[in-house]
Length: 261
Image (tube, helix red, strand yellow):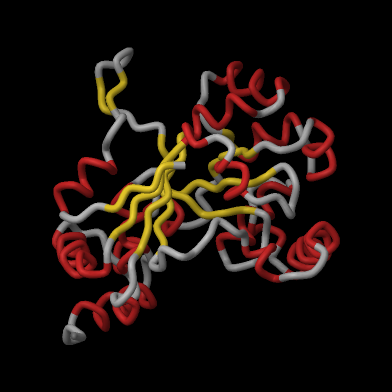
């Protein structure tokens, strides 16, 4: 995967929106999913992998307990993929990773922690359309039948009810899927998730063997303040991305805090 270090706001825009022109549609429609990290040294390790221990065994215990104690009406349909997505959305360690269709939402997460403006951030970009060319035929057939580029939890569930069925389809692949609109936060963040075919598989390693599927943009520390200020002016902030009093107070506290030098 190419790593590109930008130096200006204009260069950052150029890289974020590169390759977005769709000749067939005659429109700019990017096929990239974006993931912003405040520290460029961060990897694509999932929260389940960071938990440590035996990932396949822990995943079962975590999901079982989460389903047991969460309200039954928390998901629209009682499926493993809905429960995993809901758990990921609320901080449960899972095999999923958070992504967004919006490059500006990704930049928000690069610049959300002003106390970390002394280090470089990064935006991961992965072409989910080309990534799905590597999934097993049963999954590709399901996408074609819907005329879709990404899965919904229902579409994935129609091919694989759970993790065992998913792993039986094949190994070493990644799926991008949209979760139900559990709340305004998931809608406003233009969110989608990725999940690997095995709970302890590394998306970093998977992408390293397929560099044509994406790139990583390094946002230098000395550019973060400009990015943050322009995102605030564009209305991309905690108040919008985290609707409610918690997001409002986070935005107010950050927006009015004096700049650290």
